[in-house]
Length: 84
Image 1 (cartoon, rainbow, N blue to C red):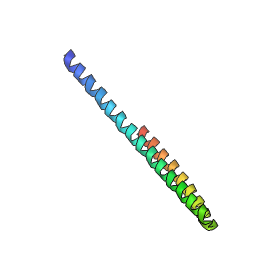
Image 2: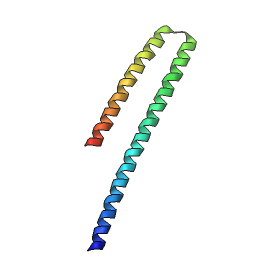
Image 3: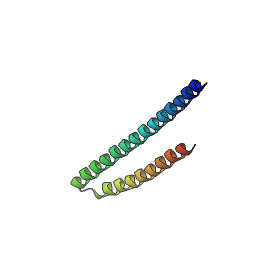
Image 4: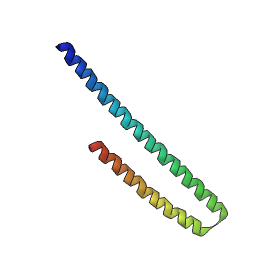
């Protein structure tokens, strides 16, 4: 009887551990995704500034605002998933 309870507890611990690993992996992927987007935007701005096209700089700044909003939404979505 004690043996069965121990096996059950170990299984529960392993399931929780697996869940936490998946959550951590998703978090790391999200951070990597944000970093790639940020680098991409910085490179775009740099190229446009070299070109001296003001209207493009304006458009990129708008894109950056949309990107920030997207980041917030993704973060909220992720937080909600953790609560459910």
